[in-house]
Length: 326
Ligand code: ACO
Image (tube, rainbow, N blue to C red; front, side, top):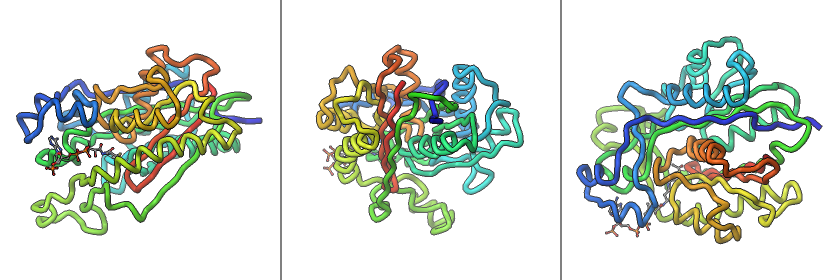
């Protein structure tokens, strides 16, 4: 049976750190509120001339190196992002392909907000399992700092910039056991960038309303997240005859420690079985899961044979989970 496995992971975040104390100077907030409500202490911010493809490039180089492959070995590039270099085209996947110095391989973007990396992994898994492609680069990358309203304390304390990447290759056993995806478009308005797209193109009015920035109704997102993290993980496990007791290690979307703790409780997991790095990076949307996975691997938290579950939720609304035999 032909399966897909993760041959290497990598990540990258900009050097510039924005602390909670720095934010106290920008909006009416304080370190204690941010830490207690979210667990976030600091986040990384890209320089003005840095785009999502730049962060993706560094993460991809590292993932390729860890997989023992060259960029020229790739058969497909898949980039998950909500902050593409350009609105529309060229896709960030195409820009990344050029930065990697290769041509003649297909490249495209996946848009599923914070669940983007899981959507990308699921898509890539199908291509590898069917034999359509062998070596696939899946990247989650975001420069959210450029779509955040730095005058809105409800959102600006939550997000950060970063990228994470995985290289998938064919395998005879283990590897990616299952994926599950979900979406509920009827609840899209709780977390959105209202303008700047074809619905309401950028204009002076948009600029004045600041509606080209992220808007979020935090409470419903919180409730949805707590429920769906556990449900998505269990659904993906049940597809292959496993259940929550089989989880060795969980890499959840890094939005909020309270959301992760509540989900962990529902899954009967201890803190040692969960990777959390949102204290350092905030919510990096599509980048958060691969950035956490890469750090967990570097930290030797995952052992060969472990059942690892990646699980995410985000705007759309969307959710998804990937089960891996490491
Ligand atoms: N500093 C101080 N006070 C603040 C801040 C801040 N940065 N932000 C909001 N407040 C105030 C609000 O104005 C409100 O005040 P009011 O009651 O006088 O109106 C109050 O704090 C809100 O407090 P709570 O209701 O207790 O806040 P809550 O416990 O809901 O926490 C939070 C807010 C952290 C946003 C939470 O709802 C949350 O994490 N939601 C999920 C967000 C999330 O995960 N989003 C990302 C989704 S993934 C993606 O696709 C991008």
